[in-house]
Amino acid sequence: MRYKAYFFCLGIISMFLGLLSILAVVLGKDSNITIVEFTSDAFRGGWGGIILLSAGLFYVHGIKRLDDIHYRAEVFVGSGMIWIVGGCEILRMILMSIPGEEGWLNTPEGFVSSYLPPYHPSILLLPFSLVVWMMERYYEKRGCRDSQGHK
Image (cartoon, rainbow, N blue to C red; front, side, top):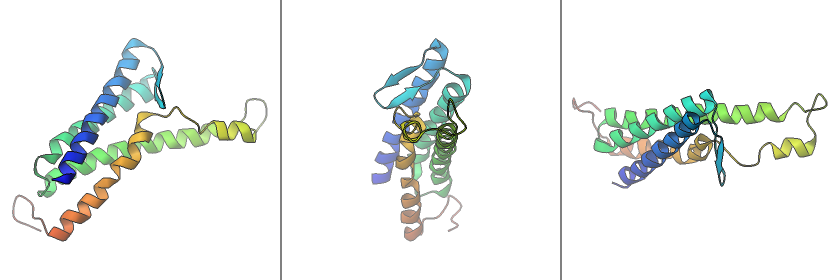
């Protein structure tokens, strides 16, 4: 039950952030809300928003019967989608921090400042999506079966 409430809230938040990302693309305006950045470019904002929206839908649909492995797989897929987008954003941050504007390499101040907020919503959701591993271990120890009765 505790995982159902957790992943329901995470799914709603993911869907909300995905919709805001899509809205930023539709309106053509970049916006920052505290530490979250919504870009208007088609890849980071548009596709990233669609993936976050889809991940939220997988979370909300997958919590119906967490004792069934097929529904847990939907929750796992939702987390995987967040990991892929978040990983791409982290790689983008790392690669953008290395080259400098004037020289070959960035200054130490410029390097550190490239890791400061605002962040893409997927980076903020990334640590919260890792709970899926704990949930899978919990149900594995309980010995839950799938809908056909297999372990």
